[in-house]
Image (cartoon, rainbow, N blue to C red; front, side, top):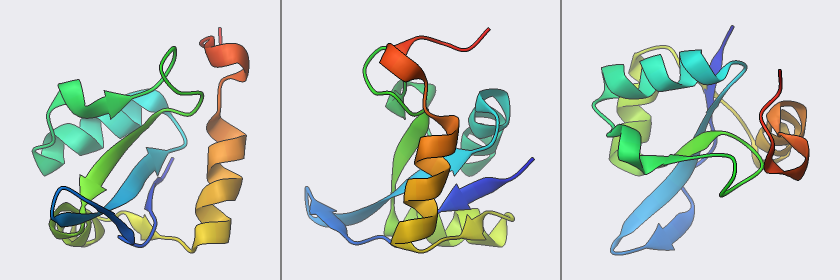
Length: 92
């Protein structure tokens, strides 16, 4: 299993943000916890169709040092499509 981050290009609240995604939701939560990202920052079903965290560019740098795979915009979209949950429902 792997954890992925795209480029921190999204500007909001004085920071640049990116997406932290993983092949498995449990792995995503474990990695986010190791990064020090609060579980309350998690975005997934039913709010969004793909489990992910939005993290700052600073957190992204730490994520890469911890082993997250850097992805292009196209690659993160492909991952989003692969891990998304149709209709916001969890997979069995």
